[in-house]
Length: 217
Image 1 (cartoon, rainbow, N blue to C red):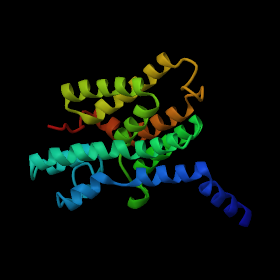
Image 2: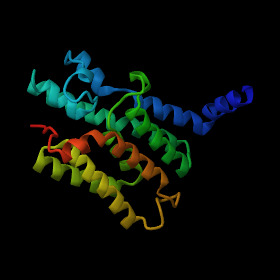
Image 3: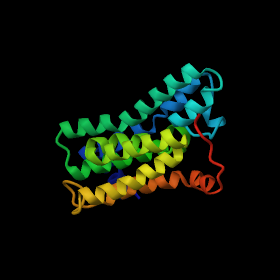
């Protein structure tokens, strides 16, 4: 047991381990929950869909103050996207390998979706995923953003836009990087991120099939 604990501590005090832990902790910061609670005076975990992301911040606060809802929704979106990016950029500056950078991306998304500050509950990971992918595979991320914008604008259904954007990531990454992701020649970390986000959207997918999914108006 002592050797296992020592090995665990060694992992998270090593160069890579510090970045993995930092990415998970940064990803875990529930900006939407904090902003809605402190500025909007609303517990979004108990309102709307119960999600801590920008969509629910916008949906819930719009009932009280549409102007504030847009501001906090946009700020939540930005902060959720940037929190993984910051750790990635620091790691890149310090010479981390491509394998390490992709692991950092996975841990940032995991942190957002299973926040240590919310008893391992969290958001759906769309904004955080976009942020890390924008750094690591910008062309794919921008294609996904374009798909998300078009679908969100035409349908007003955030979850549908997110799901189709994720599908576009799979297709475009395969098309642009036939031999695997740059630097690691594998799609494994990208598929892990996509699986996490798809998994978090299962309730939305069920509501979409039943035509019960709410719109962001």
